[in-house]
Image 1 (cartoon, one colour):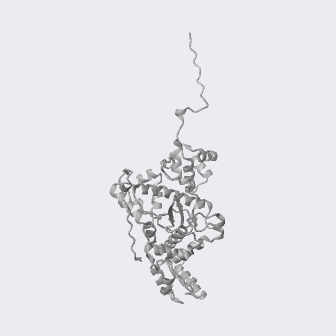
Image 2: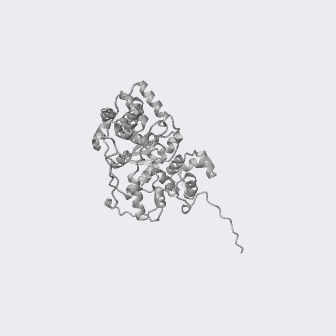
Image 3: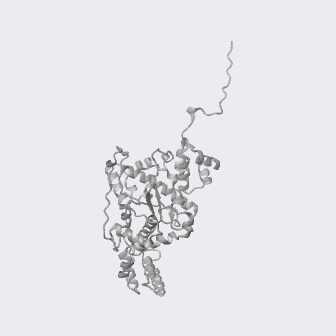
Length: 398
């Protein structure tokens, strides 16, 4: 008797043991937006259809696509696998971020900037898992019952500076619990920005600017965090010129009126403007603007001073400017990791971010950590984490 072999019919349903784990759809979208790519562009890079990318961002992608996605989007494959205790970075949206100007930047640029902000959340999560950072102690005002001038003076009083010039504003912000990071380049149209996530304040700094202008940017963003941290409705944003409020706060935080008038006399000369620039650690144009606003320069004198400053190169830069302010947080992490033999590659793998991204977020510090490949073990005891004790020099160094 002969046995007839029949072909096995394949089931249209995938067997349970053949189901592949999927990559996070939210992380795929976040990485694409950070890279500044459209769905069409990502599809072309991967050699798939736009519908496939849409499916990836709705239902997730097979784990076998992790390396291809990571290569195109500039992350590690581990970025697409979300651990249970990781922050829901996809919850951070453009509506929660304070951008300096919406008219100059495109939607794509703002989404990319927010994407780097999401990456900063992952980076700082790694940092706080291994180090104990200062807690936020910013006074929160609603910006209605108190003016920007009053809010700035309250903060100066809380920080113990009275009307004296402020030292490193970057270090001051870090020492008071603000997570400050540098922003990878997404275009000159996107300025510094700030946001609050899980009750923790963050500031992104544009490193393409001069140190003086970065100080003003940080002061401006602190103004948003102090006055506008409570959620504002769209109508409230339109009713109040929040950017003007933050600008006024920054001017008073860096150049309080009484001290400014004692340093900058009426009808101030160009040399006196430049002397005040060095005294307060701000841009020369900012001093001229402040002098005009406070009546120390007439309209004609203000135009003359601005013209003279432009002729000397102060509109586009700051000749003989102050030293760049450095991050104590990231410098401490670099020293600690170097001592422990923890490489940037280790941090990259544990966060899912590329070494280039870590470099861009850390004021260029993390590329200095090259040796070793050991991971860090934390025993769960809060006191096992080294505590950063940030010391702020009360005097500003030029």
